[in-house]
Length: 271
Image (cartoon, rainbow, N blue to C red; front, top):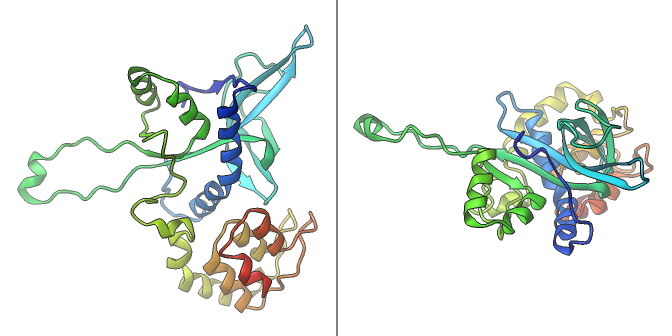
């Protein structure tokens, strides 16, 4: 990603503004994937980061804006938290490694990438197969795709080679893994369903976790709701969680479900 660390957006470009808004609206899918990544024993994401605007006034009083990436992301339902991974071009008030808490409404993009799984050849076919591994496939990257749409074919190829990622079709931006092959993944992350038995077992062994409140004032029900995990939300409720508990921000799990528009979870919390 060092090849494309920052960009200077035209605040008057309606298409770029649309890209920013789309990133904010779909950020919930980024966080759902990232929340499961934190639980994986073997990492599944090649890249995982969020872009935001950083600014300061220059000596002439003009505002300088650079959009840069942060990683090690956390999210409490309202605020995106992480560490700057880009070296600013012109800004003097921020530097690599600085920690930021940014309202979701202020982010300008998100991106994660996953290397597609490949069926390994067997027998003689293995001798004649290509040893080239597929490039990581990107999800999100709305501002990047806007810029790619303005490039010539040659420029776009050079851009993608610099990133060493498969950005796909800028007219068809994906937000979840295997979205085309398994469209149900848009509703529920497969790990939420596959891990149900282990999650039930975990709560049986750690019943105090059901009522535990973290430093952000979030309960387990809050966190699983924010991450869009219907299966685990149901398990938590069946285990006796109080769905009326409020976070430090004064919000219930239902408030977060509505705020993030997790339509499949809202009815469960309304009952």
